[in-house]
Length: 216
Image (cartoon, rainbow, N blue to C red):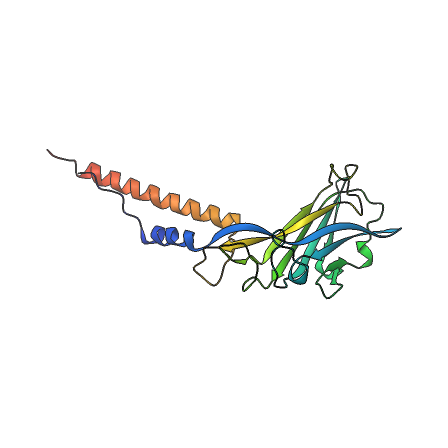
């Protein structure tokens, strides 16, 4: 008689964890721009599009959300890069707008092909204006700005023209107060573990079948 493979307790727990958190929408919370602030100063600025600056449905969160910069990695056409730390960025007004204000922030005359902004958002729950079904947003965000070949000119960033929307990741379907995004390596390790468990169970069943052949 063929016996179905039993699931181990570890596998059952792992399967039960998967539906605990589901990621939903990308929610606009800000705008990253490459600005010409004077005739000889080009820098990156962030406009906070939450709180009083929100404009539903495009940027819907009417609760103020603080944008904190972790780093901005600027990539140049020659292949080199520059990392501007979060300490180079300061909140410049009551709306929560953040500018790169240190001397290293002036990139006037540089040929920039892209820049990657990394940062965190706070608060992430208790927000008004989230899309239907969302219960909050993730803390971390990452946004990449590249040349806009349609509205701007050239293959490098043009100050006063190029920009990128900063999106938060909306979260829905959570059963826990803590929601986190597992690293890709975590998913890979978990997947390998589940596959190994399944293979071990299958081999065990085959050995049992050979040791006890079926009789009519």
